[in-house]
Length: 482
Image 1 (cartoon, one colour):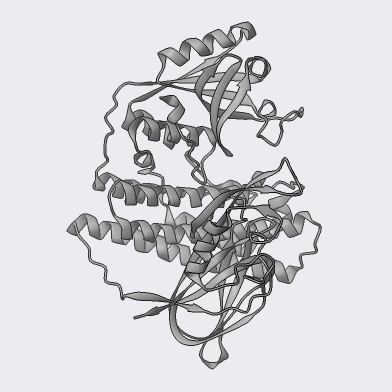
Image 2 (tube, rainbow, N blue to C red; image 1 turned 60 degrees about the vertical axis):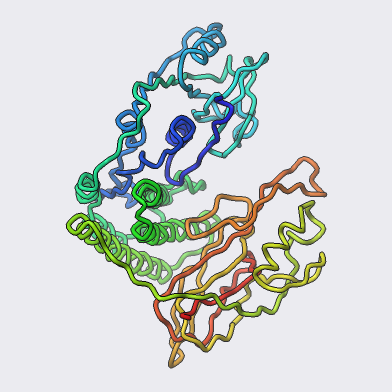
């Protein structure tokens, strides 16, 4: 039943690609084979740094055709009156159908009811008397209704999908290695690093654009992050190469940090805050250092892949680790546990109490907002574990680690907003629908996440949290060797 199609969202892909992925997952039980060649980076110098990315946006469609035997046919609709009849006819005859609609007819989209719109793709899952039921991947929405009257004015076209061969085909490791070598141009990453470290111009990159999703530099980092996430999923799900997958995911986290820093700078810029030449130099240096780490990681991954191909095996040794909780001095009552929301309190408390003993009554202090607190450790650590969330958008900041001889090491820290998509490093521990008591018609899906930050072996004297009241933490732990 097409009603069983569930929307899937993968970072870095647009609505049509996410829709195809969702259909593949429904028809074949998996979609990760589509990502076998997702790892790519090609770059040329351009006036704007962000516009220098050479990116193949058709990989998902091409792989769906090649690996899953999917045949796509685009249908332009010129006859307004015939739209309903055409949809009903194709719905019966084709394996799946994607509609191209104006966003201003979709009640769940931001531009609903306005004169401004973009063309958006949704998948039709059922036909009812007065219209259709469809699923949307961006944002993820199930069982949303579009009437025939809305489609009369807002349907721009439709794509039908037929399956020629339902057997999914697999790609050899040799082909994967050759493709990575061909597509992942590490010299191009070095070229971009050189350009951004010497010639980053905030005004040139951002112009007068207030929407971050229209900024080319942001989209460059978003696409590359997404490509790494997708390839990591392929290695894990299709080749069972979990350690290799984790290697790629660690690099994806670094690309994501470049994206989050771009968001942070753009927010200051768009709000009219003064950014001095000294700050711009600091940003350039930060980007440079982050890209240098990425280059090392990418080289190491390609070398590891080559060794696997040559030996057909590889061995990784890891010390056994354990997490030791650190008691926090709470300074606020989380809005999850106060009177602002109707939530299933017991489910949430089960997660939190499992992590650390806290006050469970409403309006008691039970977590912290980050206010530059310094937490004494005095141990050799290999990482940090936090359970928490952010408010007022995704928050990107820095933790400071005080080591021997009072040396300070800065580590990036990012938490996604509690109502938004999780970040790569985050593991969703708990998720629930929220309904505010003050805003009767406003609903949220809120979440609590765990974040692990792996470090080298560090003799840690103390850890200093950022000055950021929008990052809220329930649990703080350190990773140590057993």
